[in-house]
Image (cartoon, rainbow, N blue to C red; front, side, top):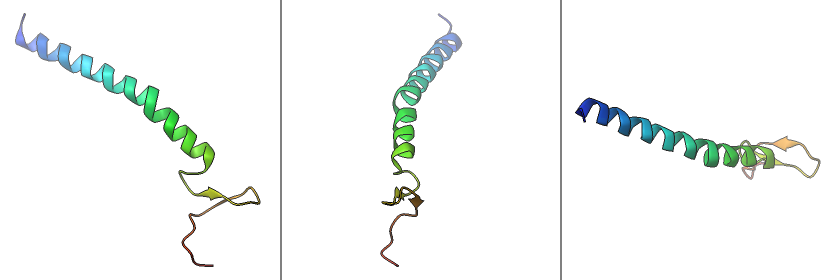
Length: 57
């Protein structure tokens, strides 16, 4: 087999593995974090999003 095609095959397989990991693992985790409020802050008892608590009032 030609070394150029071997490198192409390896890079294609690595790309498929990386895209599978991103679509099956990273995307659901980011969605869960955004829905639970952990990505941009937290939810107050009133149900509104707020900035992450810094201790200042």
